[in-house]
Length: 279
Image (cartoon, rainbow, N blue to C red; front, side):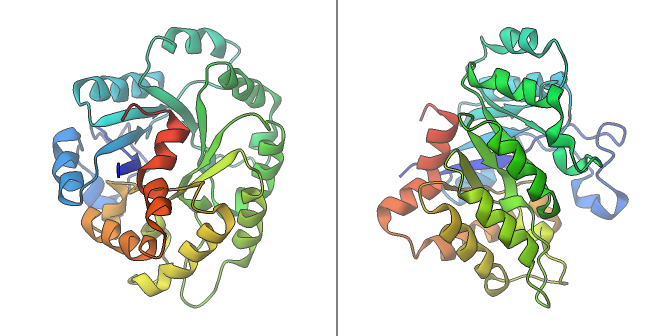
């Protein structure tokens, strides 16, 4: 069984480039490179990873591709391109010769416009991905699910991969019912897959445990099924609340209820299929 971490990041840290890393996130205020990640994945028997953009620049895409070329266990890259620009086609044509580029992402969660995904220019860029056989990663908060539903319905032939189960507000005192309603509705779209990743950083309680996050696993599995759900670590961001090994161990507990064939899909098969990875 191939085991793939479908979601992690690298960066050469600087405050100017990564302004979202506040002083309360000191554990993230340093550089993270392949030499840092490899021991983490080896310890939990992860065979390969997909590197995802953390900056909105073409430099970021090239940076990740170069890491992937130098490290065969980095099986693919989800980069950034200027999807809303009129020259997006020429940018994609330049990148067509980079087989390690498997998808693209925009940090929609930081957009203040609650109709950002309705923009015609952005949707024109999304249409250009289909002919290049690239997936699109959806990064949103749960409150942005309504516009995401409209967005996905405009592109029934495009493969979408929802990051971090759409970031529900996780607290023991209250279930995020608005998130659940939108999440389950989005899962009805067969062209959307989902990453079970980054939950620990959405926890509002002082601590988290397997019992707290279990209902979110159950909801994700019920909504997307074993054929469209995949493992992701969100390393190094997960270090704000968990080690890599502790998150992988928690997910192992949840996934142990799956059949052997379903586990193979969740741990690697679905990511391999979605991103067309060479494994």
